[in-house]
Image (cartoon, rainbow, N blue to C red; front, side, top):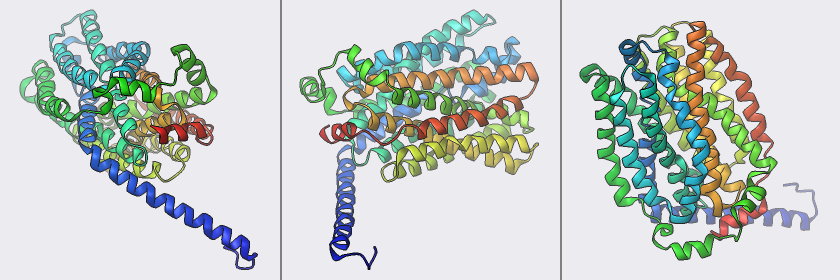
Length: 439
């Protein structure tokens, strides 16, 4: 504060500072009240998120056994994820619209059962690639149902002041899964073979997650559909929502940024075991190091969640979009160095922890809360496309060149593009902020 300024100006500066302090204290009290009321929903949503990543963090461990059994290439093994990605693009918004209409609980419970059953069906794979891809059609249905929109939709409607941290804790479920699933999958394959592992893995996760979701995943939107329709309806048709929200430069920039960011970070995270094997580590060492992704993702997600409630979100998003470049550069610079490998895995984990949290938060802040399910369903479809196509592309690069170096080098310009797109979003629209307070 300038002491030489007139007393009226100094008084005005003190008043503004006081109002900001009062606003901060009110937000903190409001966030605490939200957490006391809704923490069981966060626990259940986080459990659902953990189950949703079942194949994302286990498929890389199945690559070598399936190659030895059937003689497939790595791209062949991961080709089923293209099917999941394509279906997510088409049907993700449909599932999102269903969430907006009937609430997330019914869809979430059905999705958990579907994911477990579909994963177990992969144990029926044979030498035919057509059979393998046909089984992945069933998996794709489950993946579309259990998409993050189901779990984040409940959180964005229950939390306003503490939304960033609530989303972060919910999405930490995927970080916990990345900590547990790779070594668990490796152990099951080593002891029982890959077919039995495809059955036991979803059985174990299903027994843990389904009871929690069934008991705790409840929101007012599920119990009071009539009240929900009155309070959240904007009177817009689907076509009007598409014209006013989806077909805008801002949504296109956010979608493109999310697609580019996820294409790098999800691909590197789920392919970390073959990446580290190519780097010079044994398969067992690579699987053990892969668990560090979960630790780093949890830490990164919680830190980002706290920051999103306090700092301009688009700046945080741009910074996080650049993180995968660091990990890729470490692997390119090193050659079998364990410390470099550990550092790269930790960076991948931090960026993975930020990715979905940032995109869910930005979607809920920049666009209509009443149509979050539909809008984030589109976003989730694009993320699934990136996560499904990325591993196929990176493994096709390996099959063609015998190395992952070209794919790692491509991460740099893609990450820079994502960062610039995040920065182009501009300030949060006033109407979105008003809508948040109303909801």
